[in-house]
Image (cartoon, rainbow, N blue to C red):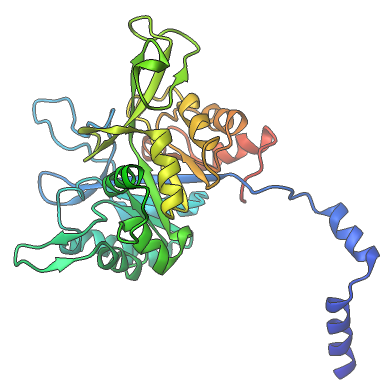
Amino acid sequence: MLEVGLALLRNFLCPSTKSKLKRLESGKASRLAKRVIACLDVRANDSGDLVVTKGDQYDVREHTDENEVRNLGKPVELAGQYYSDGADEVTFLNITGFRDFPLGDLPMLQVLRYTSENVFVPLAVGGGIRDFTDANGRYYSCLEVASEYFRSGADKISIGSDAVYAAETYLKTGVKTGQSSIEQISTVYGKQAVVVSIDPRRLYVKSPEEVEFKTVKLRSPGPHGEYYVWYQCTINGGREGRPIGAYELAKAVEELGAGEILLNCIDCDGQGQGFDIDLIRLITDAVSIPVIASSGAGAVEHFSEVFQKTSASAALAAGIFHRREVPILSVKKHLLENGIEVRS
């Protein structure tokens, strides 16, 4: 037995050249596999129950007389289904978190706890990650809010509106104070645990000189003959535009300590016409951290297109998975058939 152990140790410490070559020849993984992520937009319906919903350009209500919240299923059940279907990650976005106190949102914390018991891929959660003062005057730091999510089963925290404010301040002062939510959480939990969710919308201009933000030249004219567009960042679920572009925001949050970017596009959301390739290429070329392409997927071909035309590390979808229009397994099969490496 001792001789066998010594032989194993010797082979580990001094592998032969022949065995090295054999491993290199047989191995085919030369780059990181692309990820397919399922996203669940979670909010309370009019009866107070947490449901998975999906917006059409961020509008989550049915266009009926009742105008009720679109209900596509229960969060824990859907997350478990997507894990079984082969999702590489599951993202929960608490889409009313910007106006609610997240530590008082016990149902959302329970969703995370129950999901983490049976879903063994990374779980990300976003919505309301910022400093709070409750009705009793008790102050909670963004780090306390994030820590409760982590204790409930989250692997990553997605920061939205608060990241916009942090980036604006940083670009104005050039100073890293260490007090922003990005800096605080990444310092304690690591950069890999901090995702910044960007919600931009297109604003068309006739010339790049019209704005101080990075523009993209359009392949076809805009609605009024414009040939350029810049991507204005928004906050509060897309309700308020801010004086900062997606390009400028992405570079700023990377410097502040973000480990990943979730890149949405309000104009493409729920349209099923494909991802905004111009936007994704703009951001992936600007930063060195992973970028998740989001908004617009309607067919398997849209996933291969975004991976072939940009450097996105992952692609995320919601509605097409919830409605079973495009199964996750079909996406992965299509990507493999097109020479795009994915996780099995």
